[in-house]
Structures are given as C-alpha cells and as structure tokens.
Image (tube, rainbow, N blue to C red; front, side, top):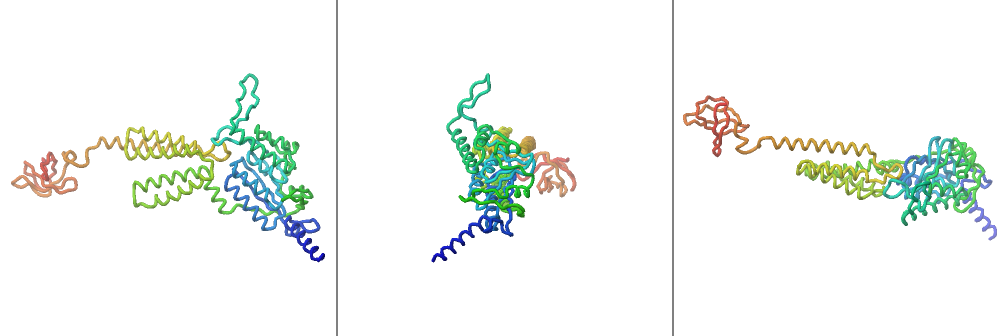
Length: 452
C-alpha cells in the first residue's frame, strides 16, 4: 500500500511539473517553447477575446512561458478587466513586455502590465497615464479635494460616482502591484495624476523588473527567477527557448473590424439608408437586404462599444429630417436642421475620452458635406420644377406645335400628331398634309390650331 501511495505522489508531482513546463530535474523539456501574444492597438472586445483564446491555445500546446508583448494607447475598461482575469488564471507564468522601441503601455496597458508576474520594457518606451475617463468622454475624472494652483480657486470635490470609479481603479491597480511585488504608490499616482514613466525611470522606481531590447534577451534574463503561478512558486527555465507567435485568427480580425468605431458608424448609416431606399422603392430587395445586414452588424458593434445613446437618437432624428426634406420639400429648414442634428449626434455617438475609440472627424465631415450637397441639389430641382409649365392639362397643351397627318378638309378638320399623340384638329385655313400647326384652344377632344 505504501508503494502505491508513493507511486501516486510521484505521478502527481510529475504532472504538476509538466504543467509548469519543467522536467523533474528542474529544467525545461526539449519540446518546451515560449508563446508570444502581441497586444497591439486599442484594447477592446476583439483584443480580450484574442488574449483569452491565445492563452488557452498556448496551454494546450504545452508552452512553458507566455510573453505578452504590448503596444497600446489604452482602451475599454471591461475589455481590460477581461484580459487581466485571463492572465491571472493562466497556467503558465506571463511576462509583460512593452516593445518594440517607441511602444507604450498607456492607460489600460499599465494595468495589464502590472497584472503580469514579470514586467519588462524595451528602451525608448513608456507607460502610465492610467486615470479612468468619464462615460461621457472628454476630460479625465476630476480628483476630489485636489490641490489648486496658487492664486486660483480651490477645486470643488468630485461627486460620489466619480470617487467610486476612481477609488475602484486605484484599488484594482494597487492590488495587482502588491500581488507581484511592485511599486504600488507610483501605480496610485498613475491613476490619480496620470503620471507617466520612461523605461529607465520605471526600472529605477521598481515599476518593472528589467529593460531589454528583444524577446530572446528577455527570456535569458528572466531565467532562474521564481514566480508565483496559480498559488504555487515555480522557477523559470526560459533561456534559449524558441518563441512561437500566436497571431489573431480570422474571427478576431473580423470582430476587430466590426467594432472599430468608424466602421460601426458607417455600418449604421448604410443600414439605415438601405432600409429607407427599400421603403421608398419596394421590391428592389438589394438595398433592403444589404441594409438589414449592415444595421444588425452595426447594432452588434454598439453593444460592445461605449455608446452615447443621446448621440444615436440625434443621428436617427437627423436622417429622418433629411428624408422628410426629400419627400416634402420646404425652403430647406427641415434638411438643414437634419444635417445639424446628424453631425452633432455623430460626434456624440462614441466615448471620445477612451483612447482609440472615436469616429474619425474626417468621415463625419465628408458625410455631412455630401448631405449638404444633395440638399442644395434637391432645393435647386424643387425651385426649377416650380418654374416649369404644367405637364398635363389645357395649359400645357396651349401653344404646343405639331404636324398635320392629312390635309385640312372642307369642314376645316383633320388629324395631326401633337406631343406624340394623334388629335382631331380644326383649322380656319386650308393647309396641306405635313404642315406645322400650333394649338390655340381645346374643346373636349378637338383642338383648335393655326399655322405655325
């Protein structure tokens, strides 16, 4: 029985070491490798799904260590928290690496770097500015009872909601700093005062663990370090490990494209205009089908992005007023009001305080300019139509010219082609076939004509 328990214990120990990417003698197996996950650009739903899926794939493939290489201006809070939860639940040690030179881990990237067991930066990189922004966008959240410059009025205390958001962010980043033994006081400064550090300054303040120029050097420098993974301390054996890149798959690329604010904005416009065209011209089908698909994709993106619904309502109102101008032409007041409402709503639509999550102002300006050009053309057509003669009726028929199809008989009547139609005409003068005549009056279905 004793031998049975000893065998089970050895088997469990072997399994634990294998899960950590080590052999019983403490070295990495020959098939071990380092998985590199590149987090580039704004952090959003696509980034969170990519990191989570890549961590699972690396675990299944038997990676010994994860290198999370970052270059991000920040992003959405919910996506950031999802990434941090995935990193804390990883079965392998995670090395946060801000690279290449010139990269940054700003805002949400600072939180993610603090969540990694080891933090490193390449030369000429920086991190910080982790102050959360308000849901309405614009300026960072004000700090309650903050000191004011000399000669100015004191800053009024922030409201309760602002303090809640700020204190939650501070507690979150301090807990990550304490978990991995890093500078928690500076982390709080990064949240309270949007403090930033270069790579060398971060190393001096013990915000990061080392400054290295490439991934191979990074793996060699961290070799032999002890880190805590899933509640257990392990020793890293990462020197010389090959690096395997885990690139985003097609689903991540598609989700990243759809959730880009400018693309989501254009999908919404295409969807609404497609449905309007289908409603005005029933049976065309293509605008309705394409519009419905674009609208559903746009609404899916709105579900994942920080949306200002007042801006969305202004956009819908503006489009409705523009369509109303085309159906019931006025002096242009309805259409101009629609363009103004549309532009204001477009600017308000997404949270402009979140880095990388705002609609390109050039796109908004281009669409607004196109709407104004169409509106001016519409008003010119309306003005021209009011000056033209009536298309139907006696007024339109008067002074119209035509050609006799036969000579005028003794009774003064004959057939003539006028306006592409055959009419019975009466003329006081005798005229041969083919002569040109002009309409001067009408009596029922008989037109009175004179020589043209």
